[in-house]
Image 1 (tube, helix red, strand yellow):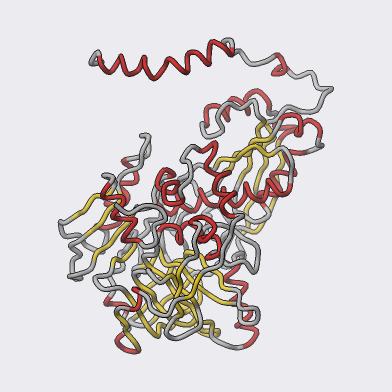
Image 2: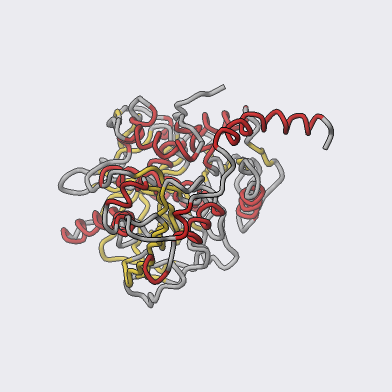
Length: 484
């Protein structure tokens, strides 16, 4: 059985199969919606239970004999934790990943690689030969949803990676939605300044850690491939592309090489984005495809987006949380933990802080909220203190708001912050997107306030709760043994 570190998508899928977490679908599926519908069904099946629905491997794709499509292989925090060899317990997960990030290690370049077993150049590099599923019924063209975009800053050589969406516009043409708040857009602007096309490589079907690190927000000039080495304890093997000096994971299933043209554009949309609704039409950049390389018997990787829960929300929201815990720990003392609901992709984040620090530092919760919002599209930040028993449980968080929050003094609204251009509530109309954001301070204020909640929480005695916690598993087991 494959074990950590998982250096290819194939090893990861084999691990999931060996552990009963991979469902192989041999019935024929249609790219027009069959793949997306079953991915959605699987994600929904685990929404209210302790585990996620199974990962899926489709082996019978209508019109594409010999191809396989995998999806949902990284849905759920327990899978992300296993892929990174950390605890799935949300009280430890973020801290353990942050510790690994600090051990960053650069990748190692190799000269031969499985991703070059098959090479299509020029006219042979026809996108119609790749089984790209549709996601939504209103989608005009199929979109590559799990493509990891690689682009390099022309002067410094800094290579940035991130999952982006690519619409298949023709045999050798893609549209790419570049968000103006992201680093790859900044890099593309450098090519615009020079009047040059920007080389791009799109990875489909990388190992799980490559997908995971692509969602971690790092400072300008830092390549996410370095984080791969920190998480696994060994360097990522990368190989140079056929048509540029970009480096891509050697074990990737498919690599599409092309260039983003500085003066040619496509129309994007509609597409069911992570913000729940379809996007409106937008003018986006055009990618000209020059070469496609792949493994023999390749596996196309598909990532469902749209109405949550989806795999994209799960990976993106969780790893954005890791990024912001790292930033908060560096910026402030007294940060205990944070929580991003894994299927919300960062709409609201809960930050837990030490009570004594919050009481001693004026407007501490507001400053924490601003720190989080500097580099993320969170619509709201809720700050609670250590009295909150479980920040991963909304019932406990709402208790803190109920007992420690008054809107007239504890609510901060920040109007017109730059956002993603994708939220349906944004007044966009083809211009920069913006969103109003909020910070809820549900912490205990400094001394001098005579607040009712200072009376203390009505728990049973601590010693009795500890004894009950030890007894509880055995009591449940006896209940099951009685057939109830």
